Image 1 (cartoon, rainbow, N blue to C red):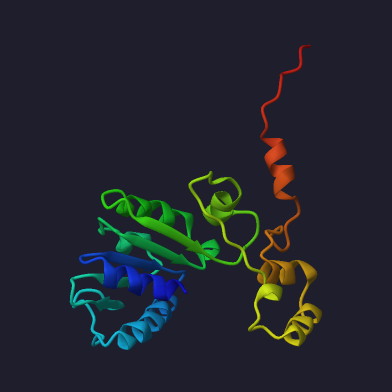
Image 2: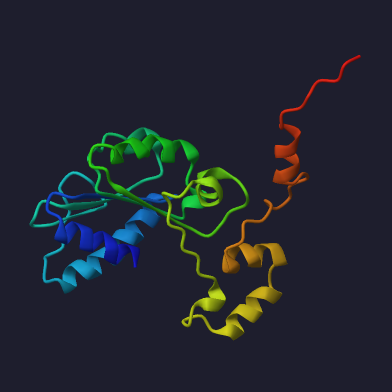
Length: 197
C-alpha cells in the first residue's frame, strides 16, 4: 500500500520528491522494487534518476529515492513531498531527526510504518505521545485475512508471548532482557520535592 501511495504521489504531482528510508539500503531497494511494479502497470518505462542508485524517475520530473541507513550520507534533500520510513522502530533516532527538516519547504507528508520494537525510540514516542497531528492506524495479524490462523497458532507456540504480541499484535512491550521497565525508569526521573532535614 505504501509503495502504491509513493507512485500515486509521484505520478499525480509533477516535480515531487518521495524519499524512502529503511534500516538498510537492501530494504529501501525492496520497497522501490515494489513501486516499480506499479510504475510498469502505468505504462511508464522504469528508469533511475541518474544520481541515486535506488531510484525511479518519472516523465513529469517526479522521483522516488530509496536511501541507505546512514545519517551522514542521506542529508541534502529538500522540498520533499512525501517521506516514508519503513520499519521505523528499527531506524536510528539521529537519522529520523536529520531527515525531518527535508519536509519543511514543501510541507511534505511523513509516514512511519513498523511493528513495535519495545518502548523506546522515535516510533514509540510519536505513536504514544506525538499529538493530534498524527493519524495512527494499527492492524494486527489476526485482522489480516491473508494470514492463516493456523500459521499464527504455530508462531505463538514457537516464540515468547511478549515477542508474539510485538510482532503480530502491534503491542509495545518491554525490550527483551531488560531488568527495569520503562515506567520504572521514567518514574525515577520525575520531579520531586527535596526533603528538609
